[in-house]
Length: 217
Image 1: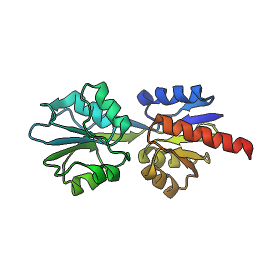
Image 2: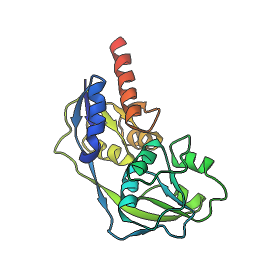
Image 3: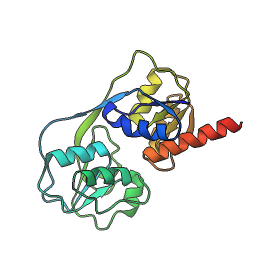
């Protein structure tokens, strides 16, 4: 079974490797690229918490931070792992990997908080904590001339779902979480499964479960 991987090219190989190990044939088709918004330092001095909601945000924080964060919060295990890879481990990770989950469990009182994320990110954290918001990267669409052939597509962000819809492919999709599912369905994509955990393992396990169910039907 051929599975289309839509992550940015430099992030696609871990997903492709996990798919091969599960007996799939991955087809790498990057739909978005990540680019820094600027090269200015990210000054974390004076903040009680720095909150990061993606591996891309973690990489930009590690590369450009000025000062050492007092405490770091990551939205989920994948983001926490990205922070740890850069030597800045997260002190707080919610049990539910979403902005809503983080808000529900965030230590109180939060004090002064900096939210490091993507341009156009949900503003829920900034509004509810509240937090200062620093956009440090953006996603840019990079569409092929046509969608590749396959049996299933993995969509790991709302941006990827939005871009995939433009290609007009009829392939069913496995999504990484509720926001991606909502974007995909709103764009007319058939979502056959949503990952139970918002990471590579969750995506591949959901793809395998769908494959097994399809083979029995």
